[in-house]
Length: 181
Image 1 (tube, rainbow, N blue to C red):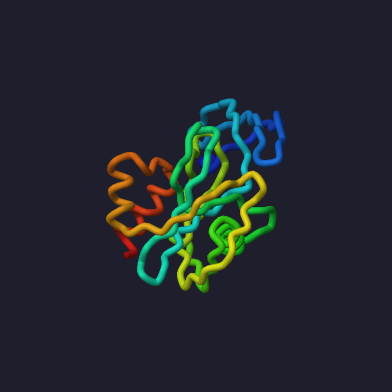
Image 2 (image 1 turned 90 degrees about the horizontal axis):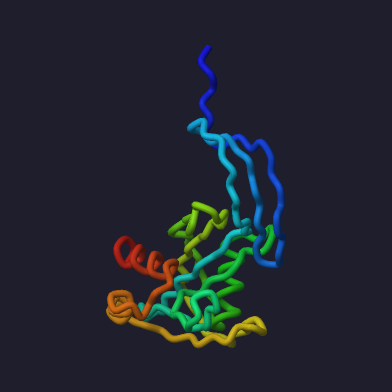
């Protein structure tokens, strides 16, 4: 009888190297499905949501905030970490309200991606937010956010000229423009 082919890695050992408030680092010794034995260091992350809020006039709400890792202010879609045990739609509603003040009647997951699968375990859900009503934003203490609504042509130009450089936002917007709008 032939040996059963592995579809995921067989973990021989696993060690937590670092555990922080936002992410951790783990080192695994594995045998991959191809039979290769390897050491893999992974950044552990609970997952995140990205929200593409569409106003009734079809403009899309973007936010601008300072990102220390990029050492600059970036325009982005609303995004944030999924809390333990939290469903993506609930996390999306929380992040949208915190960062923009908007509430949505409907959230639809339209992309489910792994942003950096070589070393990051994060799973990212990109959701369309529709039926928006304005309210007061409640950003976290360390978030200084500016929200602004843009038309499709403006966003396409921002992508084309490099004014919009955030990968998750570019992916979500281009997918939305190509397949959903």
